[in-house]
Image 1 (cartoon, rainbow, N blue to C red):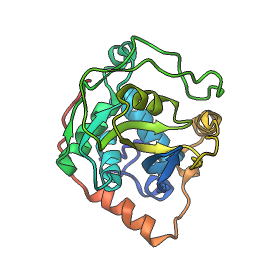
Image 2: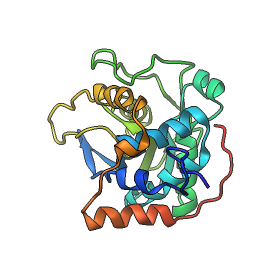
Image 3: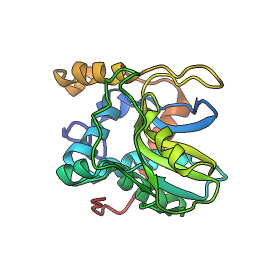
Image 4: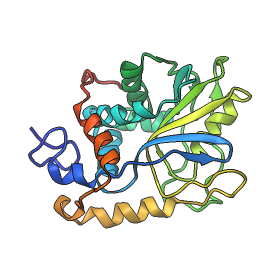
Length: 241
């Protein structure tokens, strides 16, 4: 059995990739609460990329097991922040739908995959400057109750999920993501552009062997959450958005 992150022996993760996971804390995006499973570094980056670019659904199920623990108590439904239609067709998978469906299996919350309609295409946003991260023209296709949880794979500046939030306004919502890059500031403070962190991590990891990314974590609570994610079993079914 091969590791879902690096494809070396180990399942679902090898011991090196498991040690490399860094559990994230809740963030605030203005007045919107963001729950994230892991920080967007090392193993977590590879898991996300294997899901969205290599159609590794099992990687999405692993991430969703940790995400399920961050679902707020007042959640009513899960709404994926869907991929552009062009990328859905070209990559054959919508990572937000995969994650939302897997979280639904663990929590019992209903998924409404068609609640947000995405534009045909928008420019790649990872590593872009703040000025380049313009709002995405999502469109709400149905009326939603308060307590919506918007589900996405990665949060950097927050521009994408906030675009989805504007589309369903005035419905109250929270955000749930697999990974978050850097520290999202709360209250009325400006949210920094963190896209460069993602781009730097991608370049840095591209030429490094997986063993070079491992480092031990000493926080027992973080280790416990990682092991709970490792122990969850989710049906391994394909979902192609």
